[in-house]
Structures are given as C-alpha cells and as structure tokens.
Length: 171
Image 1 (cartoon, rainbow, N blue to C red):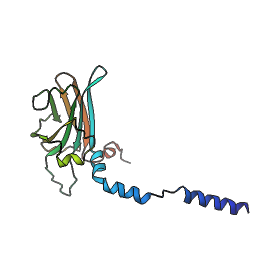
Image 2: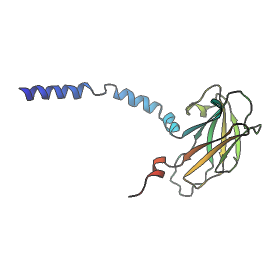
Image 3: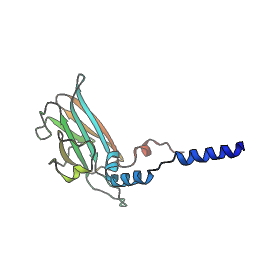
Image 4: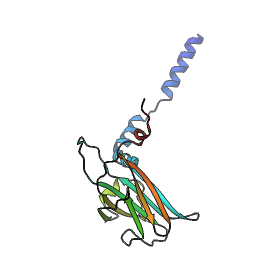
C-alpha cells in the first residue's frame, strides 16, 4: 500500500510540475529567433568620467557562417552610440572605432526606422546607429576598439565562432 501511494505521488509530481505552455514557449522563441541570434553577437562598452557614463556603445556583428573556405567578405557591424551630453559623433572625429587597429572602409548613418534595427537588441530612440564596414580579417576572434578624445577607450571582443570554442582546451 505504501509503495502504491509513493508511486501515485511520484507520478502526480512528475506530470503536475511539467511545463504546460511548452508549445507557447517554443512558438515565442521561433517568432523571435533572429533577435536571439543577433543578441548572441552583440557586445557593449561604456566610457565614463568619474562615476558618470558619458558614452555607451553597442555593436552587433553581422556575420553568417558559410560553407566557403575562402570567405573574404567584409566585416560588418551595426553600432549604436548613446552620448550623455549629445556632443560629438563618428563623423566629427570625436569618437573613433577600429577593428584590430584597422580603420573602417565605410561608415553609414542609419535612420531610426531602418529595417535592420528591428532585429538587434538594445535599440532605443536616443541612440545614433551606424553601419560600419571593415576589411576582411582571417582571425577567428578580434577586438573592436572604441576611442574618445576625452573619455578614453573601451574594447569589445567578437568571434566568428562561438566564444567557448576559443577557450576550450583540447583533450
């Protein structure tokens, strides 16, 4: 009798504690899959003066893996720049962004209603967005360095492969 009661209790706990909305969770994930993929390739850095944040930079790496072993596509980033005092920009030269010490090939300001901003995280109406294009790099990991003439510099670390692959030691 005690075994039967234990078995019924165990079964009710297993079935009672399972996720009833699993299908809904999967549908929500599938609906926002592009957002989650871009979120994995997004980094941020802040430049501070004392305890006050003066500049916040977010960068999303727009990289898609291909089967091509000789891939020489340019490295592209959507960069968001929020400035506390609304002074300065990339165009004025107050701020600089380099990839492994290389200057960008092109910098294009994006409109707030640009379709590419719908997929990225950390998008706000107070942020200026840019599309940065850098020359191709063969390295699997690299640094994007954000510099200000007044507030110093910050580093963002990106990789073409999942970052855990770069830190995993072989057997």
